[in-house]
Image 1 (cartoon, rainbow, N blue to C red):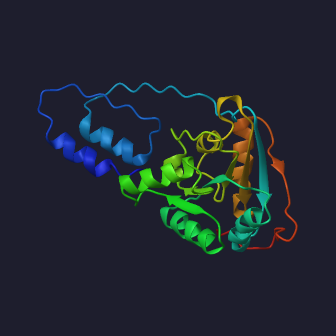
Image 2: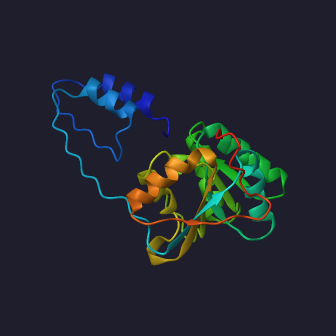
Length: 224
């Protein structure tokens, strides 16, 4: 996700043989599965998977909203002062960049963090967010794992994540070290199945909250 796959392949070409190769990964998406087939010979696969569980101290909510009004709702939450600082997750790199620019145009201090950025650019974005020069970090799932920023009070899933496991990693960016935090997810008509699957894996329902003026129309198309 961070764009290191080409670098890994270049390095592997220069590693001499014979050698022993072990592959460790927090997840096993198709790109990594394909890589393991290329670099491993008859490997033994050991999978350790914990049941997805919400972070303790994190209050969760689903916000039903028409797909066409998601951007307006996000802006509304900040401009009305309901949220001062947040980590906002989007599905794509393009949307993260575009959303950060849109928030900036509204006078908000926002910055993007996505895979097309160089490492120095990512470092500057993270440093600015940590030091309070930016109030909003709009990121792809590049920030869902391993990102440790003290004092993040709010996580907003502008786009629902691809799986319940990724959901728990995202909302785990708040409520760190037994602190309290809040996480909300914007859901459209097309996200009903995602909501049911996530609640089933978590073993508990997620609170549904309607925001005045942004109520969802059940007849609206489900595309995001």
